[in-house]
Structures are given as structure tokens and as C-alpha cells.
Length: 55
Image 1: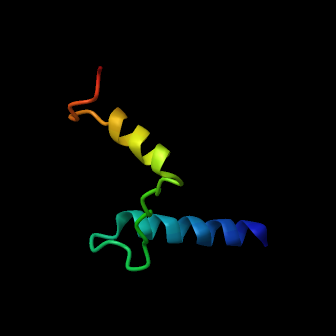
Image 2: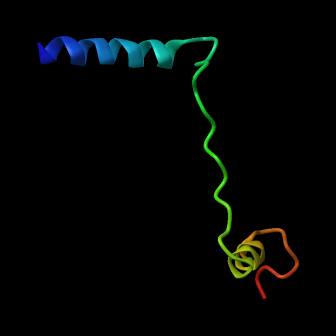
């Protein structure tokens, strides 16, 4: 019996991977929000392309 469930799950995954129109229920991951202003500033400073980066 477990083999049937594994086979069905594999088939569903295969259909999701090979669907030319994309999955409708696929959700985009949310961006991680900084918990504090200090984390936000540290993240901005570490971003390439900022004038402060690399000092």
C-alpha cells in the first residue's frame, strides 16, 4: 500500500515539474523583513552598489 502513495506522489511531482503553464497554487516566498532598524541598516550597508559598502 505505501508503494501506491509513493508512486502517486511521484506522478504529481512529475506533472508539476513538466507543466508548461506553471503551477496555479505555487506561492512566491515572502521577503524576510528585518526585525529592527539596526538589522535593516546593517543589511543596507552590506549590499553591493551602495556608497558605504566596502569602507
